[in-house]
Image (cartoon, rainbow, N blue to C red; front, top):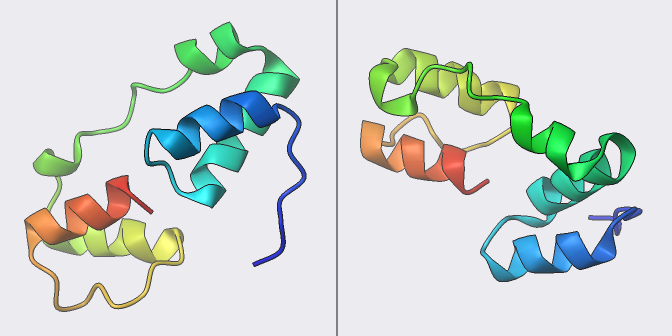
Length: 85
């Protein structure tokens, strides 16, 4: 995977230390640099909890994110993969 161009390397490093994937850390740190950390922090919270979704809905979300190998996972395993991609 090519190294992402980071606009807030300190935030990226902190997120990676906290266990975020490279993609997720880069996405968050770049959004925070562009829009401001407080704006990124206020955004979100409108999505339905993964626990409230059905397995087919979780599989569809995994497909949207480009995750592979999820067809045989149980609900808890799917949720873990989605949260930690």
